[in-house]
Image (cartoon, rainbow, N blue to C red; front, side, top):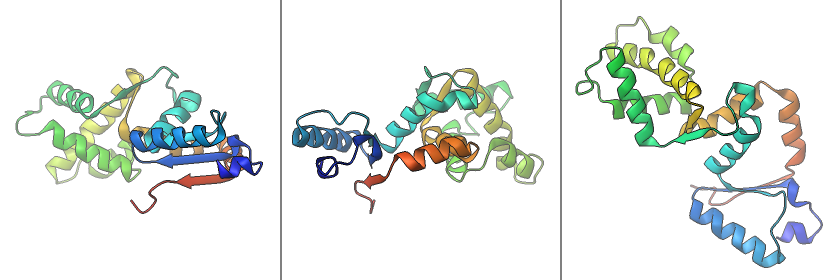
Length: 184
């Protein structure tokens, strides 16, 4: 609100926080201080802003703007179905654990293809199974026009990393980036 009161365009501000509650509180405070909604300002959670970005630019990766967002249960259910389709015993090979491992790989920006190439024929049987499931999981998400929670964070990076013009557009647009509870 201070920046806007000093003449900064609300469209030049990106404000991000961790929880929906905190994002709602931030928006309410800004509206209260300004007496109006800060039109064009990007204010929300990391996941919410990632979803907003993907609604605008996900088509660059082949998703439509009407995508679904898979929660943890949806992801586990899909991994369980994939596991069964390849003949894996889902009691021995826990789909929840596999979902967690795939999320960790995504957070480390390791693609399904990279993991498959590195571990698809390795000695570690768990890594071989994950290497078999991970590409099928990501392909099925795309077929269902869905992203999981980690995709909301990493797919925008993938798009910006392969599109210099779009990256420059956002770099020049957001002159002020405000991160609530940065220490967390």
